[in-house]
Image (cartoon, rainbow, N blue to C red; front, side, top):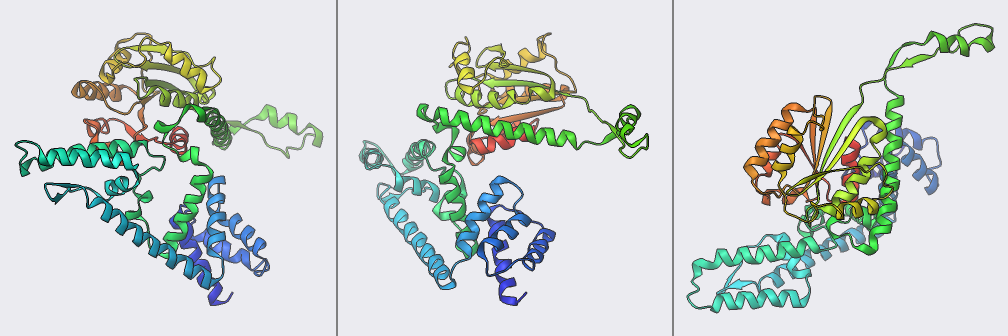
Length: 438
């Protein structure tokens, strides 16, 4: 294999790693070896050979295909493409900074992050004007001194953060911001490939807090498909568990056809103790729809556990039977009938109920799943109750619909993380990965 082709392959593997296809060194060597078995002038054959060696899942195959089509093109065309993209990004940065420069308090620019400046440049004209009007009133107000600037900045930051959460594009993920976009060839190609996949599967990567009623049928179909893949994956893992020993009865039965010669040995399967799952779902006004999505995923795990108890809570708590429900819409409708729906959130009170309720089985085989954004009344009490629960159960997983980059704004969350595994579940893809981890 000549040096030019090898160099191109190494650069292509860098693109794949940047895009999230984490191939090992041995897989890269296998891929290079595979090309010696195909006609390297046959684009389709090269693509199939490389994909078979490095792409291990449906998601990775999609990423691989997008990266391959963007990387293996005419060198001059690719160079122009990368240069054009880099210049466009630099120009976009200048436009954002210029527009954000109009945000001033008494002639001084506000101290905003690049991310919030980008949000400001993309909101509607009326939303920008509303912020400018507020700044003008604050600057010219009676007795408004220069030392009030930090207060004004905090108000503007709060407004922009609220608008950020409503955006279709997940700006709270640094990789999606123009200021964090890579400028290398590998970075540009990988980012464009990921963007193409996000657009193709927009609902999978869409922030769950922005899911609208019109999207619900499609979301339910996605949940069903992802849950089924999760079940199949779980069954495959169970089939490959260690053997407990030779099963003489089945071995003799299977060997009758060969005259009693033991050609086919049969083994007993090692069955570990089934897990007990207890789910606590926050159904306050901002959380009930997300909790419905999670409960649908959790319901697919029931076949692999000895028991699964599900509770919904706000300032009170109720037990919910989800076995009879077939879709997340059914679960959501049942949640809306609950007496605890759309009230405040008191996580500590919910955990205290679980710890004292004689019908709630909490022991060393129990895995607890808490579904909440961690915004609660009486943070100190919630932390103490969580600590007591963690001492009694096998593990606590906390599924949080807020993106991890925004966790620092939630009071008490760092204390919660000491006693549980906090997981970012801000979109369906992350929620599916979290449920697979369970």
